[in-house]
Image (cartoon, rainbow, N blue to C red):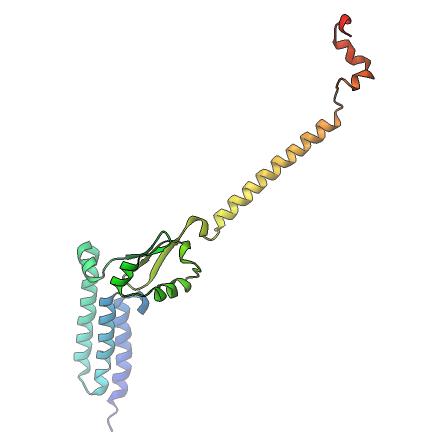
Amino acid sequence: MEWDFIWKAALIVVVGTFLLRIAGRKTISQMTLAETVIMIAIGSLLIQPVAGKNVWVTFMVGGILILTLLAMEYVQVKSDGLERLITGKSKVVIQNGKIQVKTLSRLRMTVDQLEMNLRQRNVTNITDVDWATLEPNGQVGFTLKQDSQPVTKKDLNQLIQALESNAQQLAQLKLQLATEEAQPKQNIFTEINDKRAKENFPDQLQ
């Protein structure tokens, strides 16, 4: 019985991990179409030595696939046109709370699938969404309308500052009212009992 499959399996794990490390730290959900195709090809290729194929040829082909992937990523950085051709671009699927049905049809995406993606992001009502796009990696990105956005720490701080300012103004107003109430007010009724009030008028008018 041949035992070479043991070292082949261990070598496959080590080399496979190294190749995927070079490819980048992306999950399957973050990969573009080209990246997914190459990763599937590498996965299928790495198992070939266990079935009796030449292990070094397999590693060489795997390296070529990774180099091809890196070259494709490089040209996408350098050229917007090639990036749109290879990766694609985002598509607007919701605008101002309204689903873009024609865009969904072209993308072969159902309303139920769109709603499922939004529910997973804690969106309860489509009318709350200002913009939503389907990204090249299949993820849905969105922004909420102004009145539907969650409260941030900045908003809370502004609210606290406003409340503190109002509290100070209210305290000053109460103090002013208390001061005014403590001072007796002179009027034409109270001056009947106050002889000093008449001193402010001419003698002929008192």
